[in-house]
Image 1 (cartoon, rainbow over the protein chains, first blue to last red):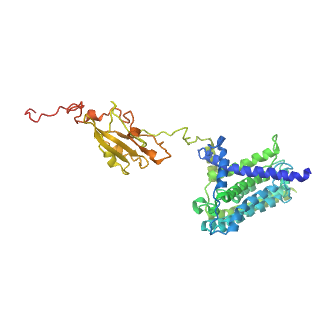
Image 2: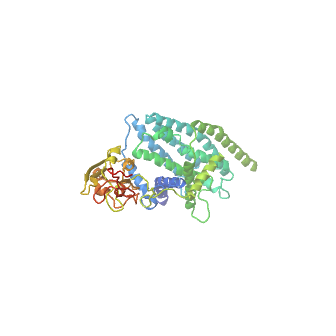
Image 3: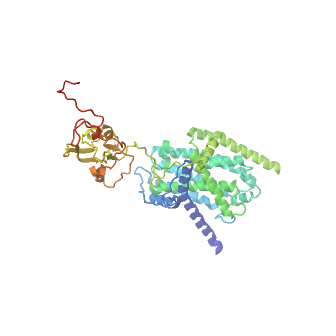
Length: 317
Length: 171
């Protein structure tokens, strides 16, 4: 009986934590951005402005949910669901603590990569179905960006996979008991971090959104909770990439004294804050810079990293 | 690439910098005494009305939000019978203050004039009149002006010579 219900319990906990965290990140991001810009941010509603989360949610839920008459309706409605669904499904393989994982797949890393890249369908379909030139441009940009950054994102992880000898995320974490993979794989970490930011379409890689040039890119036609879904999906993506970084490079739940789940949460939170710092500090590159940077610099670097790691592992054997 | 890392560091250091936000309803920004805010009508140091109802402010007003009616008291001293400023039209340009020959109309550093009803923004003379002399504490128009009013004849103002007797031959 316990073995049947335990996965359901985990699913419930994970959904609760992730969805609440992604809503709370709206507040976290605004407060942190304000901190780095010498402002206060939302600090009026409730203690520390925490009520802002509730206020924002109520606002999003009660806004008019409008579908433009020129849009491709089924696709337009479906698109925002995809980004949230794929990001949430990815959490199925994320181990939060030893034994606390929904599905401990032996191809966990591949599943993560596959699911997070499926998220781009959401953006492309949203851009296409909006029937708006800026949205389409945003969608096309997102497709091109994903295509080029997905390649070395996967390659940058393979060094970790070689060192751990497994695609299973729990094995990878356990393999870091002696030394976090960020030290032997520091190049891979930097590459994955950059690819991860591009993957979540966060600043400085938000070319699909690009308020200053594409108005809001793929979601300019969206309003109400459909826009909210993109918002939440983006934050879930940020949590996912941060969790992945801490699992693959920073030893996941491993750490002294504190309970494992707390270590995992702390490491993940650190990278979420780093994501927000990126947004606060870095300017957006031009699109051609983004592409040439991805193909001409990052991809060769990822290949070299993979080659060297493989050679070292072979030589040691 | 290095410059990006440096800008990340520079931005991160701002976490420990002083915040420039002024938390408005609790804290207030300093507005200089010459700030162009709510308009007031001031009084002489001896408490009399400064306004002589010359209508120059109403003429100078580019949005025609000042309306007044001149009258005279028993001493021959001009003053406005009513004085009305429609602050829903006022653009706080300060031309009325510049036009005023007696420093009666003055703009103050007060901007908190929010109202729920538009007609509450029409200020009458009782709303506009303050008890003090405003920005010019020693100025008293009627003590300086060479106009004869009740209680003060020609030649009796400050620094004013007695009128020349044009029938006399003496210089």
